[in-house]
Image (tube, rainbow, N blue to C red; front, side, top):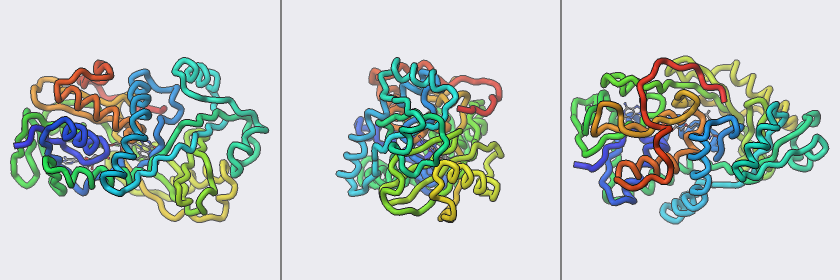
Length: 366
Ligand SMILES: Cc1cc2nc3c(=O)[nH]c(=O)nc-3n(C[C@H](O)[C@H](O)[C@H](O)COP(=O)(O)OP(=O)(O)OC[C@H]3O[C@@H](n4cnc5c(N)ncnc54)[C@H](O)[C@@H]3O)c2cc1C
């Protein structure tokens, strides 16, 4: 029997499994499909919340710690597996943010580098940028990570660990104290069970009689192929962004849609994302996107994830609801939950993330 069963092989579940194994535990991961193929694969990989000053201190605390952890984590994964998650500090340029004053005050208070750029400074910051933006906010330390590679590296590392059991195509139908019931009829038992099932976490817990407000929020993305170095920084305007990868791919995201678990991509989203991308980067006009895809973010009220013991249960835990920030928050979330599960003193106060039962919630907008 494992010490821990982790349900869900997205970035949250895999990162948690890694932390628990590093703490000396035996871990089984149960994944409904293939590990790392849902939201964590679909995301953009920005290692920062978009407009970070608009989030609560609970999100900022996790993001700050995770940003410190990412460079060493990616180096360790590269050394262990030969797979490079491509953590690259390109900086983030935010254009015409209406609350720039709040942003600068937040950055000063947090000690985060952020510089206001006037209209005539923008072209030298990013040569591909359209003319006409009035101002920008430049965050030079913001990085992005190639999330599919991060997941491949995490998986490769877990696969070679003698105390890790990865079971794919093992959908869980119901959970309880110290057990998970598979659709195939098998009951898997462990000292503790942790639900890391992303957008499906609310549904899974509801099937076990626990109400937790985690809902799917769809996001669609486009991928372009340009030459390496075509775009040098991440750019963001009115919630739409472009992210350069090292090999010249540029990702453009993303939509925010609530239509249950439907992941169908739409022409409407493609058109809206293309228009937003071309307005920021006119060199994209006439370039056809290479691919379009969609993923289901695990939405929670104000984007604050639920992390901790499930109310009314001794041996059932949850780590879900990371909404738009699961990739950036993952190392810090995993560390916090592992600290709690392994009886260590948490580096971050767990109180703001404690799972609570509450009423249905409005779509977070940040
Ligand atoms: C378009 C888009 C862009 C994004 N961009 C960014 C970004 O730039 N930066 C950032 O930080 N975040 C970003 N995000 C958000 C981020 O991707 C998510 O917050 C994060 O991936 C959530 O990770 P997760 O492990 O909780 O969920 P998932 O990756 O969805 O993993 C959950 C896993 O649980 C499995 N599962 C579900 N139910 C069961 C069951 N009953 N039994 C067994 N397994 C089950 C699923 O199959 C899945 O593999 C983006 C998301 C999207 C969609």
